[in-house]
Length: 284
Image (cartoon, rainbow, N blue to C red; front, side, top):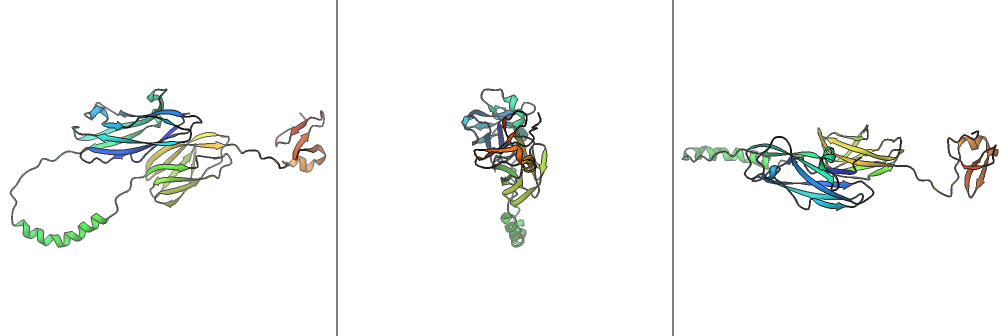
């Protein structure tokens, strides 16, 4: 399983004078530092973007510590490109492996280069001044409404915590970002319900897992996939100083002995002392 995960601030880049930026957050979910490269690759037929992607990534190769998240700023410049919609795929990958081995972790970004309308110089008809003056009063109210209306928010996932929990499930995970009215989380192959705390925070409870290990965490909101992260299930840790009691010892007290404040099970045929764990057959 690839132990890298990435989320984007947006999958559509708003261009101003042909330029725009987005932030890619890359997480190393492995237990060792990882040399990670963030690459930009063209999608589809050859295009007129500078360098085929128009993307510039400062320090694309970075060493990410275990469990750490690093943010890359990706700048796009479409100056000189023909009008149209271009697709660029951002892929985080290990510097020691080929980018295509990590293609499933990437996201496609949309770049829209609009057509530039030709400037036509015309003589201004003076009679229109009177019409404009009459419309200003009404139009002023409409303009004020448009300018003060809150901008549309694009759903995005920026972080989540904690990144691990017990196999018994029930770990409350907090997602941070921008979310729509409905958010769906899939842990491994199990879809779970979510609770919207605010427009920027959503929580959910992890389902039980059959065994410890890492599983993909898929987040969808507002009809869009926000990202794929990694959640780790861990086995419960044994605690010292207590007494383990199971049904066998309750109903067969003479078959159990105690040693150093921990309960063990004594086999009748050999006298061997074994840890008293559920599922041990003393007749073996």
